[in-house]
Structure formats: C-alpha cells, structure tokens
Length: 222
Image (cartoon, rainbow, N blue to C red; front, side, top):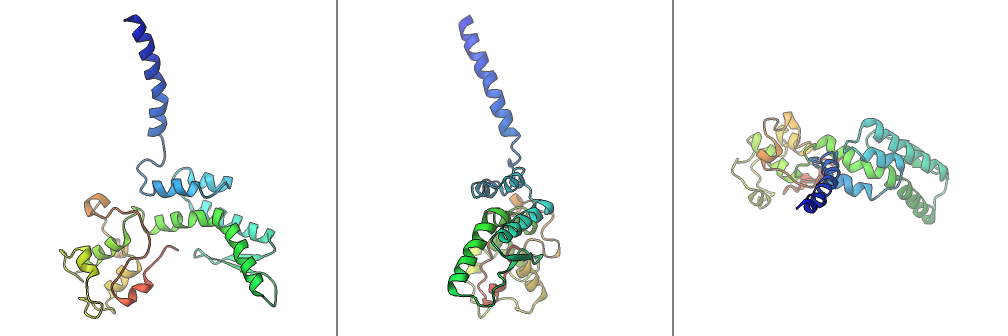
C-alpha cells in the first residue's frame, strides 16, 4: 500500500501546474478566443504577437501595428499614410504606372500589411462593433424586432424568404437605416440581454444577409 501512495501523490502534484495554466489563459471565456488563436498563426512579428496575447487589442496596439505597416512600406520605397478609418493609402511617387508596377505594389502591400495591421483588423474593429461576437444576420433581425419593423415571432428562415419587393418596412425608415448601419448597438442595442439569453451567439462578423438590395451597404468592420 505504501508504494501506491508514493506513485499517486507525485502524479497529482504534476497535474496541478497544468490545471493552473489552463485556468489562467486570458482567452478563456473570450467570445473571440478562436479568432485570437488563429491570428497568432498568421504572424511572427513580436509586437503583434504581444498584442494578441491577452485577448484585447488596445487603441495603442492597433496604432503600433499601423505604424509598423507604414514603416515596412517605407522600406519598400512607398510613402504611406493612415486614413484614420482602417485603411492605408500608399504612393509610389511614379508618374507612370504599368501593370507590372501595380502587381508589385499589391504584393508589397500584402506582405507588409497582412502580418501587421491585417492580423489585427478583424479583431480590433470587430470587437468594437460586436463585443459578444454575435451573428450579424441574427442581430439585424433582432434589431428589426425591437423597433417593431417585423413580427417578434419571425424566424431567420422566414426573414430570408421575404419578398424583397414587398418588405414589411420602408427602406427610408430611420430605424431600418439604424439597424442596417449597426445592428448590435443601434439605440443601445439589447443591454438587458446576455448573448446567451438573446440566443444570438455566433462566430462571424461578416455583413448581414438582407433580402433587400439596399443590404449591400450593410456595415462592416472599420
């Protein structure tokens, strides 16, 4: 019996650090945990990896990524500037641009932007607009219901089957426009409901699929 205790006790002690390490993972419970982990596989830039480490992209970290991208483009001979809304404009300084020049510029931009600012874009802008990582299409429908633009019992399948030429709301309705622009936060969103209660947990921040043609202007990150 004594020998069994000697074997079991060290085994349990060895497990304790593993349990502790899992419980201290900053991504535990983060709605974007999968996206943060995937993003870490797309870059080897130390500053970007550090920004992804705690599951939160701060304004300062995003601006640092922007500047790293601009610096990289400068090393390739481009003048670049951030437009303040997620985009970067680049200028080659050439008066005549050939197809080969455009191809080279696109490749340089891709190589500089993707592992720096590009890795953070979805997480930075997505979390700002959709902190719970809710499904955008479901949230748009929820927004329509909250403002009485559609029946509260309408399902997503019924919503998608609507005739775009005979919608139950007007395309000029202010609440419709508000829901289109920001279905998550328009007029305070749904602060009294948790994502679980609302039944809206999702994994995508892509634009909502609206049956009307005006849905082409749905809000996207940044």
